[in-house]
Amino acid sequence: VTGRSIANVSRQNDSNAGTRSPAGAVSAADAAKLVSPARMSTAIIYARVSTSRQADEGLPVASQIEHCQQKAASLGATVLATFRDEGLSGRSAARPAFQQAIAYCAQHQVDYFIAWNTSRFARNKLDAASFKQLLRADGTRVVYAGTELDSETDEGWFSESIFEIMDEHYS
Image 1 (tube, rainbow, N blue to C red):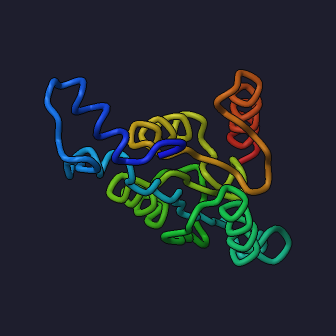
Image 2: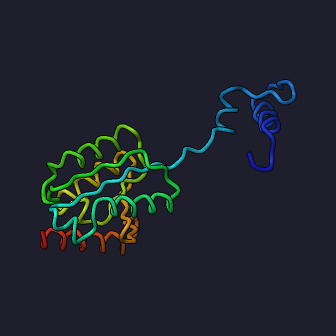
Image 3: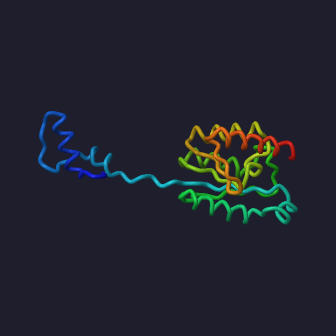
């Protein structure tokens, strides 16, 4: 508690209630509210390549994961799990590791779902929007290691939407 001791807060609360407790006494509930540690930010990483040629010529899964780990560090988030789909197109949501990542976020209250870019998350605009809505409902925010987008702003939301449309068009 900044600038005041727990005892002072307790005395204030007690005087407001019309009763006095011994100096320094704090109920367990009040103490928990005052000194509970902040929850650490958490993240999962999702990486995907569609073809072996893409892995060889583009950004291999291992490189995507490395960049995503750096993004997690910049967010101050601990990576809880890493999910990877290799040889599967992002045009379909029927990707086992992707589905596991979505479910994991819901079960573990993950703060960030980190992917290399919008095309690694999904190559179907409707799927991208649907899964981001599911994640948002569980308190998870999708962020990208290779692109600085803040989808909380109008400009970021618009840019992300354009990228998703282009991802679908070029898939």
